[in-house]
Image 1 (cartoon, rainbow, N blue to C red):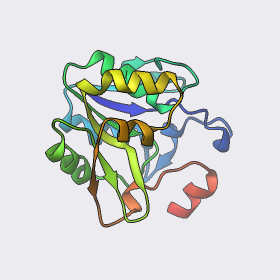
Image 2: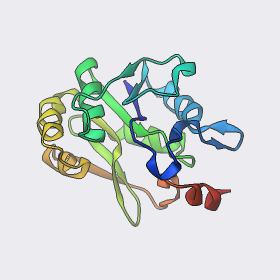
Image 3: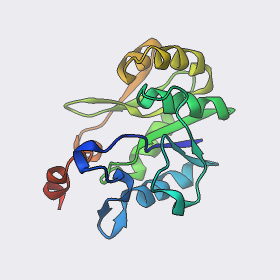
Image 4: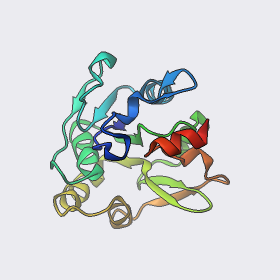
Amino acid sequence: LGGILVGGQARRLGGMAKGLIQFNNQSLLKRTIELLTPYCEQVVLLGNPRGYEGFNLEALPDSYPEAGPLSGLAAALDVTSREVLIVPCDLPLLTASILSELLVHCGTVPVACRGPERTHPLIACYPKWTREIIHKLARQSRSAHQAFEACEGRWVTFESEAPFTNINTPQDLAKMR
């Protein structure tokens, strides 16, 4: 299952849904859908689908409203029989090769991306067995890093931080153009 995190408030973008931001003449959400589709039997939106109705994707509401992105991951793990390949919708430089590399390493433990500067536990593959742990920590409003560690996840290291650059503000978008 491919899960795209779309549930943020986008306060720093004046309320504009991040996935609708245009980058290289394509919305970030459309680009993310196209990245995930070759690797996933189904792609779903995780979180509030407001503004994304035209994409004709199933939207899974957060399991625990206001609990952050772990709540979306919990919802995805509820409906899959295997694993969830999860990514945020606001990564204009994410590549198919990164997703492919994650899936090569996905198996009995979660795997997530690590760049030279930061770790990214929400650009990851989580097996179904992590469901109970993710639910428990989402109910406690814990961080994605805490959940990844609790599941004894492994990092897949990449040489560049660039593919993990996200857009949170109009200034972030301007820097990328």
